Image 1: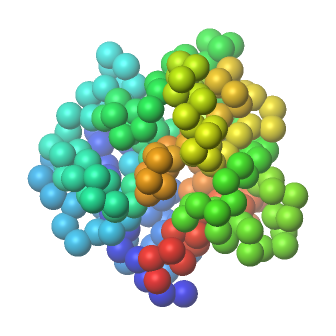
Image 2: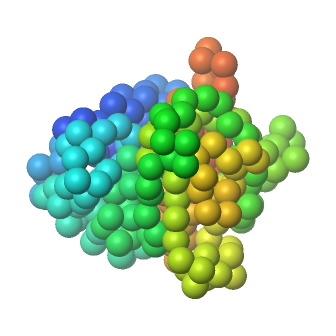
Length: 228
């Protein structure tokens, strides 16, 4: 497998940055660096990961302060130029706050933190984030299992935005059983250009069999294959 250059942004309060780094560096053998949120540039990284956690303690709204971290200016430039960005959980919230993805994430409908494995349906099998699933007979049903761990994962958007997402095939993953009340069971979506992905479930926590699940690694393999 060829190598991509991943950058994992670390915000104060990030707690899935090490999971992402371990998956990319040690499991998939990719060129991976941590990027401190106060950096002004992402350097030569060609894939940016905004990890899960509780950036700035989730004050105001989740991701609302992190969106103004110095590095985000260059992340937005990178994304606007077609560079790949993946936001997981809190990273998804930051992408929405930054206007890189439509909609918003609210408190779970149950008003309780949810932490469990969930089944996802792959809605777009032709994206740069899902191609490796299509090539693997293990996923012929179009479903994968990954964990969720969030209190603010209830994705909402207005009816016009939902229509746009469906018409443009921007919904990448849907929950088989909705754990948080998200509109139309949306678990992950991408921008119209297809280079920015936001998702609440954690593929980086399900990328090696020693932890019981490795379905998530194929998302990262899809991205790596799209670059090389």
